[in-house]
Structure formats: C-alpha cells, structure tokens
Length: 203
Image 1 (cartoon, rainbow, N blue to C red):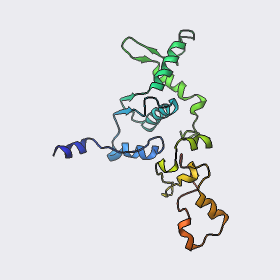
Image 2: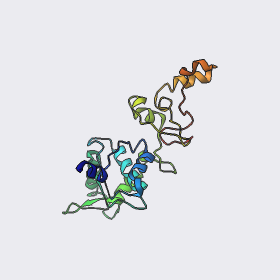
Image 3: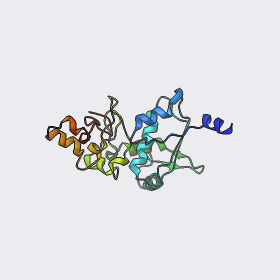
Image 4: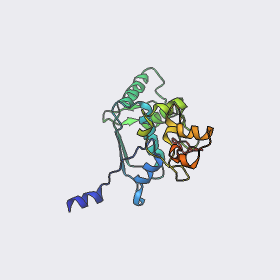
C-alpha cells in the first residue's frame, strides 16, 4: 500500500539530540546509512547556544561523511550573523572569520565565522566534545526532572533524573545513604543509576 511505501521511505523518531546525542546518532545511522541532508528547526527564537550546539553536533557526528546540505531556521543565528557582517565595516576585512553575503545569497567565510563563534568561551566543551555545564546550567535546562529524556548509563542502567536535575537531588537516594533501609522498604529506594552524569554519561 501507499502507507507501507511511505513508512519504508521515511521513518520518524522522537529524540532530543542535545540531551541524547548517542541515541540520536544511532537512529540517524540505522541500517548503516548516513543523512544526506539535515534540517534544523528547534524554535525560531531558541537561544543561540542551543542552535550552535545542534549544528556542531551534526558536523562532528558525521564528520567522516558530512551531509551535503544543512538547513537551519534560527532568528538568533541570523541576528548573530547580521552583527558580524555589520562589524566588518570597521574591522579588518582581511579577517577570514568575518562573513560576507554575496548578491546570490551565498555566505563567504561562513564556516570560518561559525568556527570562531563556536570556539568562544560560552560554548566550551571537554575533550570528547561534550558541552561543559555548571550545576546551575544543568538544573535550568528542564522545568521538571520528568520532562528530561531517559538516558542509559554505560552499564545499561537508566540514569536518575532527579539526582541530576532536581535542586534537592534524589530524596530516595539521599535517604538510603543516611539510613539503613530494609528490604521491606524497597518501594522507598531509587533503583536508578546515581553514579553517572545524565548529560555526558561520565562517572
């Protein structure tokens, strides 16, 4: 049927590539395929940091076989580009990190500009390409721990979201550390992983 042909041609998955980059990569490369085109629309007024990190993830995750085209819809990134172009009137025009838009709409020095943007301190990463977050930044990313996507630790165990994203941490885990919990109180224990970071899965 037409529906069967459509499902074989296009597969839809619900995943947060910023919160679960490994899971998103696994879905994007299922059946040993690589995306030829990537469309990024994570909210027209989404903060610049999220947009830059999403583009970084695409370019890094598929660095050995980059998509031929990455389409981005972002007011924040457009505003940043406009600011950089305006600054070129006073700065050194020989700077290869300064972008310029041609009459055809092509952005010259675009990748160099993006590299300089992503290299700024506000987008700092560790040696494995993970965004370095403060505890407050981590807590502020989600309004409630239950809204955070479930992520498995390297051991295959679900990582406790309350332990990572609630200001008071995981109360069940904290109580189990301070008191002796009997087997009869099994319902009061948290059986999720409290050893690994939910954001980067590091111990």
